[in-house]
Length: 179
Image (cartoon, rainbow, N blue to C red):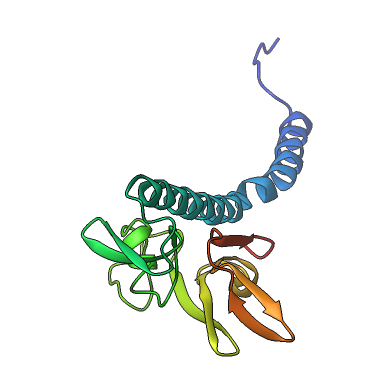
């Protein structure tokens, strides 16, 4: 009598089929992690901009600059324009590179971005004659036009014309459906 113990071919095939079904259902969840991390980066950048804006405003209040239409304050060695104590975006150089963490990888100015999960392109967002803000697009996203952070000056519309709404904080809009 042969006393060899082992698995039958049917048992082995059953285990392989079960593992295949499990991996087919679990794999899409793990592939979606890069999309989730891109969305989290966009959301955290938005929070950073809001925090920086509020800290600059608090500093302007402490320095007595909250009632001045045009004033400046020093942030990390860079002058930032303020309207009634709130930062104003004039171009990407005066705000984005000075306020937001410079470790962010920008396509137009940084080299060595290859290993980064998110690489951003910066666009100006003009509305009529008023400079409105900047848009950071994640160039590595599934759909960069739907994976962005938009930072706008506080504006209001009067008869179709855009004007600065002085004395109001920046508006931060995040879009993560295409990340």
